Length: 405
Length: 53
Image (tube, rainbow over all chains, first blue to last red; front, side, top):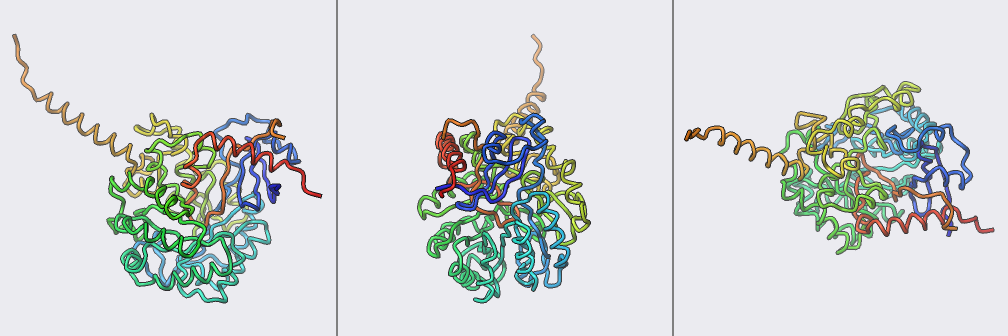
């Protein structure tokens, strides 16, 4: 067996190579790049160990529209039936620029991307310029013909936040049967089909049922996405309880072992994982990280805004303007990239800071301070509780009468 | 071929269709640092391996 390099790009540390089977992105050092016959890069004249960002994101989330008929109660992009959308030409131009920068993957989503009649043209264009298009969909209205056309995508995940009644409770409408049908249709034409499940306070207990569904339909992954109080979700009181935050990582491992399925947690769950003190070396090797916005990830909103991630962050440029993404990437995204350098306590003294990066900026921002530690992190909660107790003790000590001998 | 200098520093498998899921692959994090080091060597060897004629 040989791993065939399908694409590669130089980085300061060496480079990133994409292999097709198994599908993977491998970070390799300069020596390995030379051994693979890659051309010398001027980037290798500077020190390999550097805090400089990657030369480009490895993946960009292209939010094609805020258009969706489903009206989910917690929709984080606040999608409506007539929301704005990138045009086909705009999407193509953005893909051209991303390809020229060396981006490997795009995640196409919305809104409901399948409601756009040009979705498959966008995907075909991504393939044509050497980018792997991936898709998230609710699956509503997906027919056999469209399922067949979905072969163009790499990974496709269907949003299933609960099974049966659990789906209705989480999303506000009874769409589970449609989602399950879509999963079956997609699985019939390709193997890289999985489930996205938003983990909220009320959907938490239904996760084992979702894992069973993934196993039963022979899907290739279950992705657990932390509920974030943004978009319409800001009106809901659905963030995980402190107890759930501590239990999510052990639960994910249990589901993986019991059902023999691949389970992934999104980057916003990183604090909940690192609280359990996994091997930092292993985590670094497997690319386990907290907020990856402005690092390996960027997002483009339907209005053209280039952002660190699709949940939060100031617009860095208008991605529809030719050359704007390339120009903004090297120096932009300071609100994300600056966190590690200026992290407040308790992140500053956390041994996982460089991996965790303070947790989710979107959640921190939703709680009022974008550059504060993630308030859902168990370590942050423990630290806050200790500080509150210390303050109480200090206040009560101050009130003690002074006894003079 | 394992004695060569070039190294694999990081490996992420699969594709991410989401806005935010480049996070934690529980499947792989179960295995510790020793397994990761061993896999880095294997991946390196498979990358360098000459193409079959």
